[in-house]
Image (cartoon, rainbow, N blue to C red; front, side):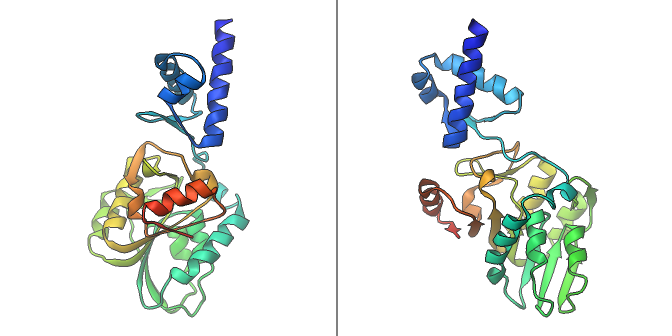
Length: 251
């Protein structure tokens, strides 16, 4: 009977989390009429099962599953194209644009007109290849250790190459995003490259599908305030207001 009650309680926790994006242990203990220690044990078990991500005060939703780059190019293509269309006007001619690896970023690159003039720096070989026919775009591929799952270059070589550049705009691929935790990724190597890309860029733009909001990974990239522009699809009004309060231009 005890196990049945625990299972029911944990299912309720997941239902609340799915609806509200985040749960607070103290508040859950009141809502479910159990001790805060019981809730914390539940959150630990659910975290171990990969069903949520524990944080200091409670838990956040787990983001979309980490899959390989080639598979992600086949998922939700219409949304990625719509986000890319909204982002395209932010790319200015004769500027230096830094682009990291992401299938949504690739969708944006594929929409750039063939006569567009710019310098594009990237650690993503697929993005560099997609620019092969753009005669007016100078392309710098950063090189480094090739991380096959994400199809990007990472490591100390990539990091050091970034020290030689300044960018007008950084197009940051987003794995997970949360108001309190900020942006995050599954690996520390990716996080360090994204941090350095942010440091050398005047502005930062990200395109984010709604399933990534209110989620967190193990390696933090930086706070929400690092983002200049955040382009997404429809969001609930309360989430929209919360991001606007962080001085991020939500589009």
